[in-house]
Image 1 (cartoon, rainbow, N blue to C red):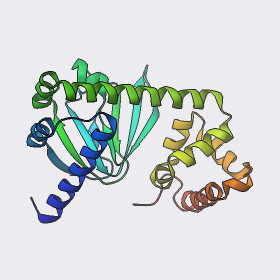
Image 2: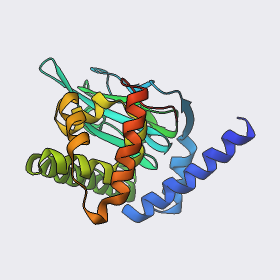
Image 3: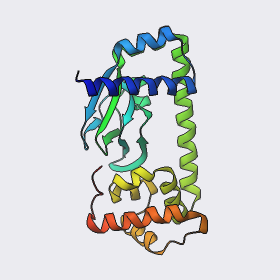
Image 4: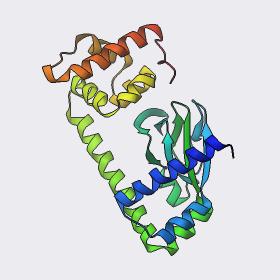
Length: 229
C-alpha cells in the first residue's frame, strides 16, 4: 500500500474508533480484532458500492466523499438519503438478513473508505457483546434519524424542505445532480427551480441564501449535474 494510502487508512481508522466510542464504546481487544479484517478502498465518482437486488456484504466507514442512497420500489426510484463522510455506510436490512437489497448506494464524488467484510465480521459481532451493543445502538440511532427526516419532509412546506436540505447537506448541494436533490425533497426538478427563484430568505438565513445563489450559477452552467469535487 502506498504511503499516502497508509496515512489515510490510519487517519480513517482513528476517526472510526472515535465514532464507535462516541456511540457505544468497545474494548481495545475487540477493536484490535476489527482492525485485523479491515480493508481500505478508493472508488471514483459514479461507482456503485451496492447495486439493486445484490446482497449487502460489508460495513463501511466512509472517510472521504458523498454517497447517495436510492430506493427502488414497485418500478419507481427515489433518493431517500445522502451519506457524507465521516460516517458508517451499510444497507443494514440486506446485510443482517443476507437478502437482496432494493437499495442502491452510489458514490456522488470520489470516495475513500474502510470496509469490514461480512464473512469475518459477523462472527465478531456474535462473539463480542460490546461490538453487538455498538451495532444495535448504531442501527437504532440511524432508524431514529431516518424517522425524524421523514417526519420533517412530510410536515414541511416545499420551501422549508429546501432550506432544511441546505442546512443539513451543504456539501451535497454543491456536488449532486439537481434531479437527485429534487427526488430527495419529493418535488419535481421544475418545482425546485421555481422554488429557488421565488423563495424568501430571513435575515438569519444569509448563509443559506449565498449557498442557493452559488447553486444557481452551477446549475445554469451544468443543468444536468453540478461541478466536480
